[in-house]
Amino acid sequence: MTALGFKPKTFSSVVRCSIQLSYAAVLGVQIYGLFLSGKKKIEIMTVELWSLGKQDKKELAEAIELYIKRLSFYTKFKFETIDNAKINTQQGKEQILDKESELILSKLNDKDILITLDEKGKSVDSIEFSKKLNQWMNQSSTRIVFLIGGSYGISAKVHERAIFKMALSALTFPHQLVRLIFTEQLYRAFSILNNEKYHHA
Image 1: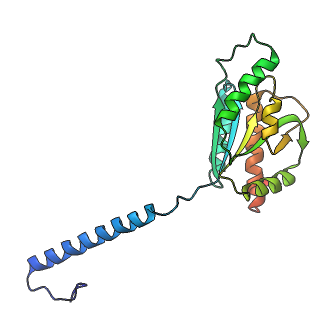
Image 2 (image 1 turned 45 degrees about the vertical axis):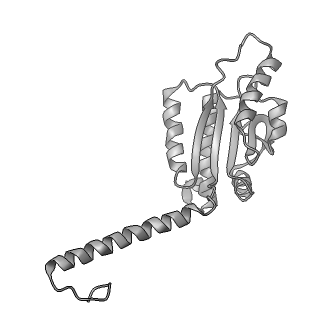
């Protein structure tokens, strides 16, 4: 007996029976796919690091990429460079900051959680950062954006949009080095949340 409830008499009937079963299976998958497509799309939390200006040191870029790959085990992570090359650098500081803030704010959605990285922000250690990261990820949002400012920092308009202003250090670092330090600290925070040995290695 076959799954359809009858015994085929010839080899050809066996073939026809197999084909019918295959068609039925394909049809079932298609119907199930249509059923799923009718459901509300599930939004996946992502963590992004935005930075103004280009990367210029290959060695640092390779190190940053190493931590980006490691972060993929924990979350959907994206690094994005915001191109500010078209902003006239002959303008005054406030005008440049205003233009950069327009670029930044235009890319944000209402649901995004924004954290600005600024040397005048609140200092946190790695444990506290991991706790805050966990808190932000538990909030009703689909994207957490960490922002590194340009040569003149971050405008007051953008800081007002942020829910937290965080300092990596009181020292001043080149922007690409800040990207490396932050991606390493983000990876460290996830390793802490997952009780892994990296933080104590």
